[in-house]
Amino acid sequence: MSQMQNVERQLREMILGLEIGPGERLTERWIESRFGASRTPVRAALLRLETEGLIARDGRGWTVAPINLAELGQIAVYREAVEVAAVRLTAALDDRGGIDVIAAMLDSCDAETPREEWHRVGLDFHIELARLSGNEFLLRAVRDAMTRLSRARWLEVRDEKALGRAWAEHHAILAAVRSADAEAAARLLSAHIAGSRDRLVTSLHDDRRGLRARGFAVVAA
Amino acid sequence: MSQMQNVERQLREMILGLEIGPGERLTERWIESRFGASRTPVRAALLRLETEGLIARDGRGWTVAPINLAELGQIAVYREAVEVAAVRLTAALDDRGGIDVIAAMLDSCDAETPREEWHRVGLDFHIELARLSGNEFLLRAVRDAMTRLSRARWLEVRDEKALGRAWAEHHAILAAVRSADAEAAARLLSAHIAGSRDRLVTSLHDDRRGLRARGFAVVAA
DNA sequence: TTGAGGGAAAGCGTCGACACAATGCCGGTT
DNA sequence: AACCGGCATTGTGTCGACGCTTTCCCTCAA
Image (cartoon, rainbow over all chains, first blue to last red; front, side):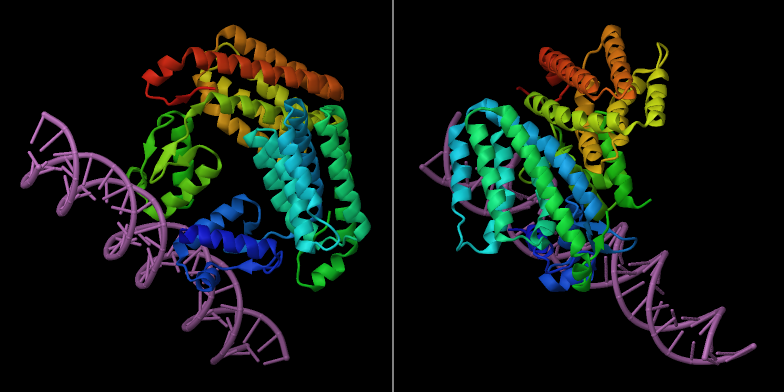
């Protein structure tokens, strides 16, 4: 494993895990000393994370991307376009095996499952569903979108009921895909994404004071 | 203008302009001496071009991305998803000014216009149309897709009739958007993308011997 | 006390060099 | 003549250092 990949992976995990807060300033020197790598691999990692939208140039220097409520709305539109296209392809593909794997992934979560796992499965459901389409570009688009949504979803205040509803909606989408009902799958997925966006934006909007108090930059819609 | 941006821009132009052929191997040393920059900005530029899909790592070293006919089909599906979503948004937005600018751009091409200009306008039409949607992610997706299509479209053998048909289809799409008829715009755009893909893949498939004779790597579908 | 100016420090852009790996070539051996 | 092993070459991964710009702070003067 090269130093560049090491730094990239660890830095991404720190950002997505909110160990480095949204809006926080980053310096190459700090990363250099933090990870024990020189600036060459550090710069390479920063360039990659920039294209993922996790960090941005801030004049001279780097800033961890803030939580941007307007951006969340735009991502929802983008997600809907690509995920619906992917699910339509998948429904026409008649690949039961892949669907079963995703269903098993969903079912691996129960009341005892830690929150981190629910979070990860919630993201991976959409990514794996897109992967079944067989279209590399749709998959990449979904993966990128979910990466950008990851921190916001982690900050969202979700009760048991919301988790259960998402779980049920995921299963309903899978059922429609399994029965090759592309229209139903598309409709359910659209509704799921819209509802997910509404809950997410509402939750973060209501919580924005608390988030800012924790040092997280939150850009209003 | 920093060296990194210089190298990135010039290298991208050389790749898109086929001055460096698809499938050709690149070494950092060669780029270094070619552009008179040291390897640090060269590496930064290569990393960015890699995320654009214009180059790829090839074990040790770099390779200019080959022309991939299967990829062109996948890009068409991806394009359709995001461009249709964008045009639906735009049709609902009721922004006549932006549409007029794009129409003027189309009309700036006539029989005297050089082929390069036709090529650029054909790409920019889709990018500018997506920009009107106001969604940064849809815009970025369309821009990325058109960048990846750029070389293949340049290699496509297009007669006057095909150029004229594309021009007419573009205008028809604009007309539908102008009259806020999202359904018609979506239908026309889908058909345009599908037809464009068919002509493109057919042309390159028929020409693949000639292209390979020119030293261009062409991966079959 | 306040403002301005200068200097020090911080930080990125860039560079050249070294280390390590892979590849190809050349010579010796069978 | 063919094969194998070692050496040279090539090329990336990484590093430390230098230069230039910007920013911050400290001091001095009004």
